Length: 359
Image 1 (cartoon, rainbow, N blue to C red):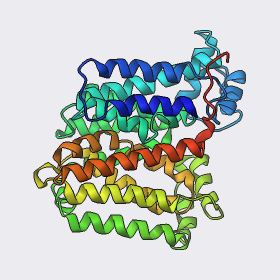
Image 2: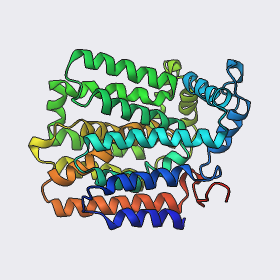
Image 3: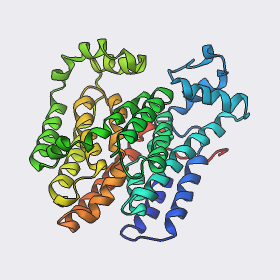
């Protein structure tokens, strides 16, 4: 785990600074650290490599060992059959798409691009991609699309239609969990803005959702109904719901408390004229979703991740737009350090030990 903490120290050393050229240096560092890792870094690599070994353009060879979306299977077949890439090259391609998409979004939309990279690393959205590759590949495509085509938001009807079409195509092509991002346009509705403009409303739904972590049986009672009406998501997500009926692996009470607490902190201290910010809405809903559905099974956290990911934009924004700035910044840093240390020490996703390719 030493390489991860060394990487973290490099980013921590520049915290609070805004290096002009450093952003690109850090981007290159993160790319190299990701693409040069060994195939053993990340638990899902084993099953992905097995799928890759047998895949071809014949649909019967797709999803041989685990269910994968159609476009992703075709992409695997194309990289193998037409480009002649081995699995390690394909793994690197996945990493590049995710990282480049994230970096472009951060550079164009973040209040402080370096600070976004700091949270990207310390809130483990970077190292998670070593294991959860397909979802983060799809999220990278989503970030790149938003940065290139929706830089001014979703204020026009044509933008909303195009956005929803792109999200649906990415979701059904690469990872269905992205469907949750279809919710984004509703936050441009005046009634929704009014609701989220009230601190009491936001704190209430966050606090109530956290209580659900302790009472999963309430949601389990409606799971059979959800399962009967969720076939459009595919067998994988229906399986998540079924597993939730009996699963003992749930969201950590402490992690849920930290995530909820930080979002409540942002809600309470964000300056009133700065709250109309799409990542704020997404992170609030992501935290609520994680608390409620994570109480059933940790597998559901994969879905909320698509919204919580935008902490990498929200926290730098709040860093400069909250009252009691010093207190808020200290809490953000402590939250990040605890999240990072917990993930590395407990070896989430089997990314420890970090070894270089060929090592």
